[in-house]
Image (cartoon, rainbow, N blue to C red; front, top):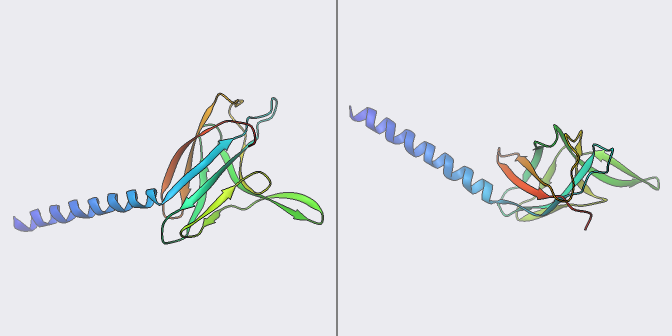
Length: 147
């Protein structure tokens, strides 16, 4: 009988520790100054910008972005090659420990394809950012013109 109680107690503390670790991991990642630009009438593509801040002691990688507004959101980067500005998908963004990465026009940014509806400056768009430690950060970004 005592072994059953010890087993339940162990399971309780194991679950509690898992919740504490997940909460701590989420609090190490913050998103600042985020916004999405309005879509152009007739276009189903837009972009999102923000600053990802990692206050933790380990690097973390943004691996996936999801939203109700689109089924296809990719991480892209602008670069100069042969005097031409080019854009390419990079797949992931590493945010070093105690550092930040800025997603901005003409640099790293999120491309949002196949919008399910036109978005305007009155909208606020939900995004879920999934990181390498299985942390999901849910954010709400306002829609506004370039800063």
